[in-house]
Image 1 (cartoon, rainbow, N blue to C red):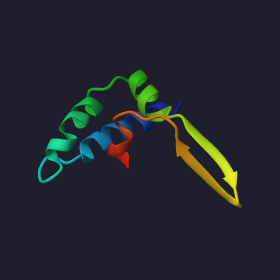
Image 2: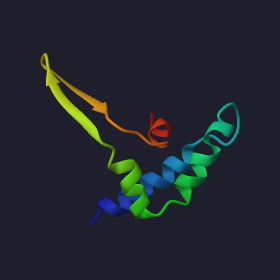
Image 3: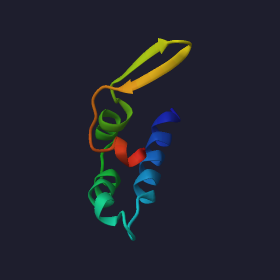
Length: 76
């Protein structure tokens, strides 16, 4: 029961952390508005459910993102 409010708080804080002034204001204006006005189901489908391939090779675990959308660059 605590996971949904935590995910919603993470969404709100990540949207508020995006720059509004300086060099990044034009690049993050649209994603910031979309993040702040996003519904919960859209949040889950676009940010939480990112297809990823996990491979264990050479004693390492490598994860690679298979498909993307416009929001992961905001978090990276």
